[in-house]
Image (tube, rainbow, N blue to C red; front, side, top):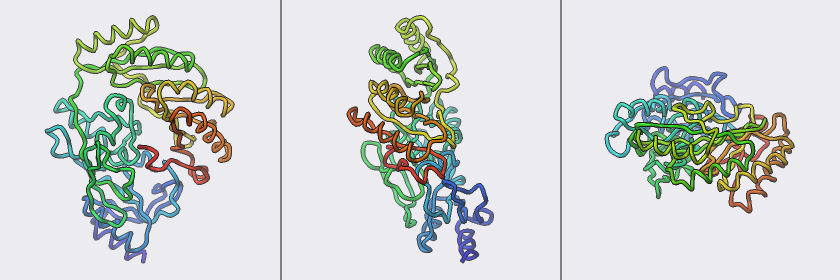
Amino acid sequence: MTDSLLDALVDICGPGFARPARSVDRVGGRRAGFVAVPATGRAAAAALRLAAERGLSARARGSGSKIDWGTPPAGLDLIVDTGRLNGMWNHHGPTAVVAAGTRITAVQAALALQGRRLAVDPPSPGATVGGMLAVNEAGPLAHRFGSPAEQTESVTYADATGAELESDGEDGRPGIAQIRGVLTAAVLRVHPRPATRRWLGRAVSTPAGVAELVEQVSAERLEPSAIEVDLPGGGGGTVAVLLEGDTETVAGRSAHLARVWGAGTVLAEQRPSWWGRYPFGPQDVAVRISVRPEGLQAVTYALRDLCGVPVTLRGSAGLGTVHAVLPAGLPARRVTEIVDGLEQVLLARNGKVVVVSAPPALAAELRMAQPRDLF
């Protein structure tokens, strides 16, 4: 059966593009059996159809930057690698059709030649369009432009049975969370590239200071593209704002916010080193917290009390979506207690918390985020 499966995958993907899995071909610590690298959506569908007919489990992989997020798979027979589903077309109007395996950086570079961009900036290095959409991975620009799912007109995909389908959903949310299969392409909105970008930063010493600075930005109606916060567990922190537009307008708005924030405000043409980066690595337990911006202060103090030490938080202060890193070495029971305690704090504030990443052995014992939790 092993040889016949490999032969069938080679017939679908072509010589050299289907192989037995190697030690690096893992999801949640589990090694796959085979890897298929289809060149078209039809081939991706055929690979999934083959897996379904033989009762095999399959998982999509883009760059692999978020491959271990969520619950580790119970079984993993086949990885469908989207690296050859690459390219962009029909991109001279308000939207672009982009193949799922295309890296966001490549799309941005191509659109920049036209003075345009996607208004997305997923934090994962090397993120692909399919990987970004699969978990609705939003960066700082979501403050102004919405999440990637909200900027998606439609997607094409192969479902778990190998059928080729298209979904356009409603309100720019094409049901991505419900898809079980492989995204093959997406129609994404395209925006003009701003002439000027400026970052303003202000140091904060307490979570209350974060709320005050964010409130000031909102009150001045400066139309920021992003409002981010970085609160290291060791104390102190920074609130930073991104202003974009034509040079004259950005200069005026920057000067105005500098006056409002007062002494200590830093104006820069380059983003802070922490901007648009996750505060956690693959061996950390990371939670995503969503709450109204005014609730971040209570969440920060509650998290400190639950963990017994201050924790690092980073993310969108303007949207109230941040990631926090729990202390290292906690057993699953303690992680669950912390998450449950935080849920109680968030309940009265219409917020939620989910565990997005953890070491594979620990993730297998935790209630990890499901795709629907990330949209």
